[in-house]
Image (cartoon, rainbow, N blue to C red):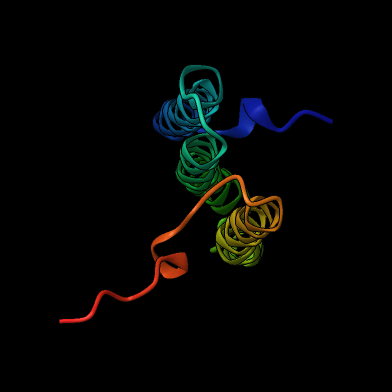
Length: 119
């Protein structure tokens, strides 16, 4: 059963605009994977793009189901909270694992690896 015909015109326009904006933001973040060179540069844009894109898509879902049910729909807020908290954590874990691997292979020297110079 499709409920889209029951959605008022203003809500359908707003939902469509938010979904399209969220998809574009996610696409822009994903294009960072192609454009940037190093692993550390590549991890950052998809994290930001997916978080902002997810926020816009969740906002459109809240508007759509709130209008259709004539009450505020809050289930999507839980989805947004879980994704907002887990995406940066996954980013940090990936970056730390890559940094650890490079240190173990001694391919990269970090400022912490440099001995302190006497003053």
